[in-house]
Length: 143
Length: 393
Image (cartoon, rainbow over all chains, first blue to last red; front, side):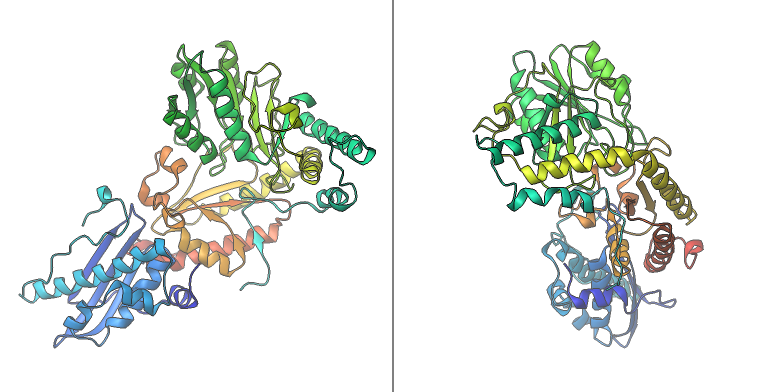
């Protein structure tokens, strides 16, 4: 059901944990859907020097968080913002169709964390966190 | 991959017992005659079907001519509901069932609803138990059928079948029970319990997949289900699955014989599993604490999700199942757990472990250790875990 890459990132997730002095924090998801992602960013000079995550969810959600944090480390905020859920899924050698929303969750969590940083540093947030049709029941979604 | 498989999902399916397979083998290539044929190799297979019918009947205290072979529990459920509904629609179009039935019942009911039948889905209490009182209150003049499962497949709760059966009989309403998880595991008496129809399956009691039966009490008004030849008294046509039926008969007889000893052994294993798992903080038992199947442990671990638990267990060779939405395409958690009033949030962390014939005490200890480790690992990763539970094993 899952690729070897997914299983690798699920069983040995990179960047699990909390950054105590994070300057950008984003949380996305809803426990009633079965996934919650929280990401912590340490941004210096517009560059994400460190990223960590905590995730409640399935194998795909944990692997997507791990891969996404790997992919944004060392990137500028602009580069990290353009990381798409498809790119995360591709980097994991694909996700089952019913699990694509897990990669969407990773993309959205990164956006929230970046915007949190921007707002905290007195700048305007980018985008507005619009619904990206994650496949979950919209009635229970907080987005 | 782990070297040894520790199978803790006997409610999903069982391996066929060695002696069951041996009993079946001659009927593939040697004793292959069609039971409807006149010559002797056909006629001898007719008598082997009679034997299997007796074996199945005596397991539930029915008469052999009240047993109809089907291809499994789902077919039996479909036949019972649709057959009774359409044979009795002049009397009424109301059917009573419960919110925690197997999908074979629920989806048949949905289909019947689309055909003009009215279905009442009774609620359950926090243990997954239906109250006989609620059954009685739901009865209307146009009620034609009550269908309540004998024991729940997810949480193992055993329903008050005898009381519901009596209510149904007193009101002159047919009573069906889906006993797929119960037959061969707990004693069943269709006469004492006033059961008119009962579904059972072979592959839940160490018999072959693709086998099952519907018990139809003599005199029950029900439509024929599969039209064709004269097999199963023309009610369920099609050349009989002779090897499968032999396997079902042999498996059910074996299960009944082994039940007293096996029940004791499995209950002890189940109780050890439950007791030790409940020592993990923020862990709850699902289902009734005592009125439950001897093989079923179902627990919720708060703050983590079931599929990720199963993946870690699988790497250790442990097979289990979950009621989490993440394990299904629907993204909805188990309808059984939500009917019991368990919130969506924590229903995702449910794990069902069902022990069986090959389960040993070492297996149980191994699973307890594996789950304790897995839960701690996933909780350390979860943003929901309260600080005091991080790094707690």
